[in-house]
Image (cartoon, rainbow, N blue to C red; front, side):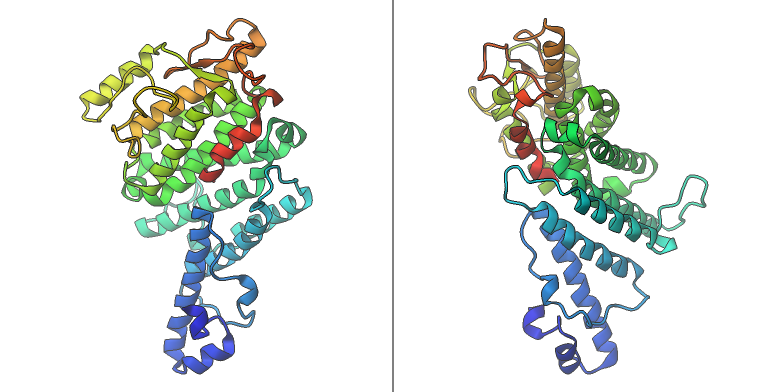
Length: 384
């Protein structure tokens, strides 16, 4: 409709809206739609409705009275470039190191130019008195991390790409850890996160994907340094609403991971971790609906997925439990490879163990090129 009305062109805008005050309001409306269009595309993976090439470069922007909107306009323009860089249909997109460096420089410059009142204060700075302003500050901080994660995301495509670009992999892992720490701190110091989880959990699931991929593809480098933040993130996952789209997206990823488990070197088994079961039992006593305390079904047999019983609307505690199972079983398989004594006998925290060397199609363990990193990467891609 914006394009049909000509709001994307300066001449037609001035012709359609002749009153100066009304034109200023329409200008804010158009650029708000532009920002929302970019956010929608990055959140859903759908292409932009408004293309930058179609927007008049001389189109006026909102005045200085709306600093957050102006900041997000600049952010969205960088986002358009990042989108073109990362939205490849190739299953194994080539890494353009120069482009990664250039885009990262642009987003860092954008962060430096955020108005002072919207900059997240440091520990030594005076804290923001306004709850609304604090929310905008943390959102812009997380958006910076998120855009940089998207820029460096191709590095995590496989174990070999991580090894070849270890410094870049370290950058994206630190960004993910920082996002998890920031959200945990926000949850501990205010009710902003709890009241607006849908807004913030997009950043959380993306950070979880980075930590999981890095830990599994390069366990020697990242499994130990990521473990604390991984479990910090899962503590937040426990509070997910089972009706939010972020929750459903994460659940879809978990189900996909279970289904390809054998390909990743993991196989379902009947062993039960007493700590996980005790935790789930406590959740049941606390009023959370838990349908299975003996691990989860991997989608290849049995009656279906655990959770709330529908397979489509899990509670956060069950998703946290399942992610723990996958993470520990994946890293446990690395111990089997290196130690020589765990293959075929290891057990994950929720019913997953390690396929023995002769049990699967040459896809033993996690963290090496034998994993089939593309399979793992594709399972997590939707979370970014």
